[in-house]
Image (cartoon, rainbow, N blue to C red; front, side, top):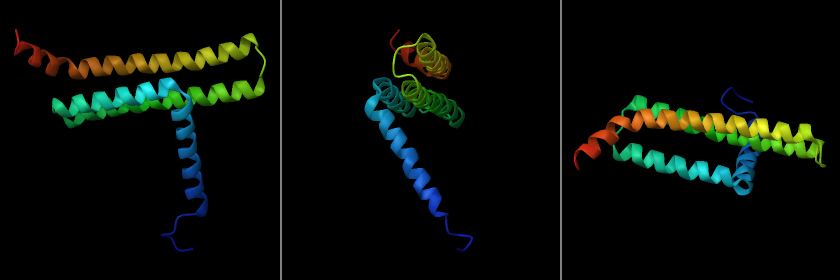
Length: 128
């Protein structure tokens, strides 16, 4: 193998990662909601011509929410595998993971609000 060839394991790992994202997309309604919201936010960012740094903040916020949602899905799967029947600690583990998604989503809303505040104010001033 030359130094320019990728190891066979990398392609397999990448395929498995896409499989996990696909599973999250197909089974988690919140994941679909977050993805649609991300598209709306990116379209709005393009429309108001945000700066490169504002785009960077939005992409970071969007990526954080999607990451948290995928990790929440993984926690739910592991908890269901380890404890198929109801157990208070299993339920709490799921609630804590969902709480992490909530914190990340709130963070994204705050970032989005700060980034879009000035363009939205300028747009509204045209009508007032």
